[in-house]
Image 1 (cartoon, one colour):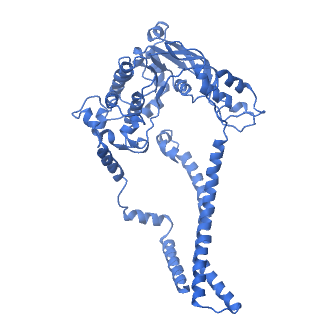
Image 2: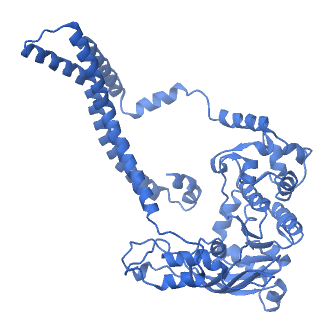
Image 3: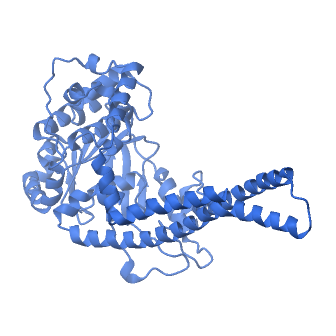
Length: 501
């Protein structure tokens, strides 16, 4: 349900309401069957709680009479107290313990599966990993995300090969594909084998350069970044990265529940000067001016209180604030307005921007559909169907007959749906003009401001529930006769229990 709610825009866009409604109905029916079973069991043991103690006391008294024992007040009260404790333990805690035991077993199985995975030793060399990956593992193969050797090679072979001083990342005949989880010990059927995501890539990312990656939708642009992040398994070839640190801004913005400042810093120490510069170059100044507590405003889960453009710029600011050797920027300009995109590129990403000025050796790898910005790039890679169709400087590509403007038109035709989806989330209040509120005032909030912002955020989820909600809840159970009948049954049950006492 969480995934369906998060992707409701896509479901509406493709008119998938009825198929997904059927899926939800089927899942709900299965859930209701299990809920009814548990409700019957719960009703059974709650009934036991009402009469077990009294029935046990009656049985004890009958036993005293049968054995000609004298029934005194002391014996009756002691027996009643003892049997009440036993009844609470057996009828109340025993069934709850069984339920907790079942939940504990489920959690234990999950932990067991995780702990039984093979250990990854990152101190091994690339030749050892390759040899291990080529050696059969008792006739069994692991297909959950590649075998162990593949995973080790993915993590450790990045240090293979010698990089020159001007090259920070190098790919040599690199091919990669996403693997399908499959039961170990069985051969993966041919129809289920996924075609290569990337095929025979040969490229060098030089230090301090702005490198643009362009191509149609689904051509493998973001997959290159996934390889550099060691998320996409490498099938063949080599990847050399040395010990470069990486900062990443994803295509889909990710935020956590916290203040804007916490989302930008992401656990790093606060450097006031750098932090203010990052907010400025990422065009977050005007947005903070409209928030109730500036950068100390608490945003909702996944940034529900922000627009798509604001979320994209906060994620970009998080990557820019981090001091890294390589910045991976996955299409951060498509979720903002045209003038904001120009502001971000010129003041932050471009060769005259913040990243280049603060660290001349910072390599910026930009995946984008905004082709007109790449005329200022140092190197452009054109992707098509998982392969590099062409690469070079913008001038070299133009001399070879590849016009960036033509690529922009092709991408706009093939990626209309994806572009429209992102534009729909564009911030309507984005602007790069500086308001009367200074940046120092926006970022000078202390702990008191944070508490006030938190109180305001939490107050939005508080309040009284109107009576119509209760009436609708009661009517959802059926007719009013059912509700009145249940109330009468509860009253009669309590009356019988009181009379028995």
